Structure formats: structure tokens, C-alpha cells
Image (cartoon, rainbow, N blue to C red; front, top):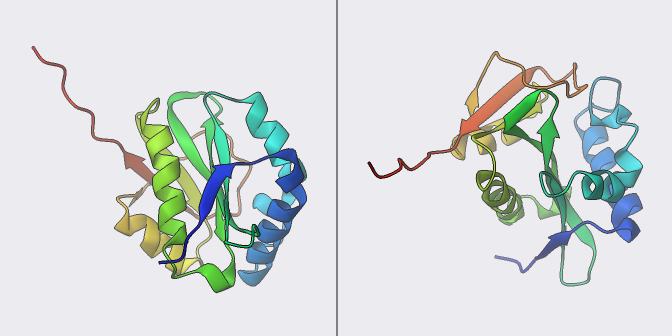
Length: 169
């Protein structure tokens, strides 16, 4: 498996992350309203997530040359206190299949489990590889929408409920 460095996003990363996300959205024909493409905050994710700490965080994955090759975040959902959203998990096309997506997801879910009961996500119907990946990681399809994500063009919704240990009686 390739070596990657995962760290919190910084302001110097904003343009590179935006380019990564837009490239992936173009690849899947999701470069339109109702997806992350139209997110007005896409070019300033470091500031957006910094303002929402400690309940949200966004990470970048760098290859051995220091190039951002993947990213993802955990965000809050309007009207939800115990369910978070997996946001903008994208991996550069030539890095898929290297384990990077799994590394990013594991990192994000470790963070999420510390303060949330469940993690929700929305994705596009044609992103079959991503949907299989989420299902392999315990996400199940749901018809219930959580929060106001603004992603009305994302047809498929998933949720993963974290196993909670029972307090000793």
C-alpha cells in the first residue's frame, strides 16, 4: 500500500482541494446544481470547517511528493445533534484502489464516533463504485433525509449507526 500523510486542511489547501473535487464531479457528470459542485463554500473549506470545530473537521491526504490526492470531512447537519454527515470524500482517479479511500473513511469515522450516534451521506446514483465501498463499510441505504445538505440531485442516501457499548448496570 502506498504511503499517505493525512492532516487537517489548511487555507493553503483550499484551491487544490476544490480542483480535486471539481475534477471528480466532472468525471461522474455531477458538475451541476444540487451537488457539491454548486456549494458556495467549496473554495474555502478550511475556514468553513475551522468555524465548526470541534464538531466538524476536514482532512487532506498527501502523497510522498506533498500533492493532495484525496480529502474528506465530517460535518454537522442542520437540526441534528447526534447524526453527522460524511462530506466530500474524493480520491484522485489515479489513486483509487490504493487503499486511500479506506484510510480517509476510517479517519473520518474514528472522529465521528467520538461525538455522534450515526453518520449519514448522500451520493449520486451513478457512483456505483462509491456506493459499493460505503456498503462494504457498514452504511445502509435509507429513504430518510437528514439535515439540509443542499444536495437535492444526490439520489442515494446512506446511514451508518455506530455500535454503542452498553453502560454497566
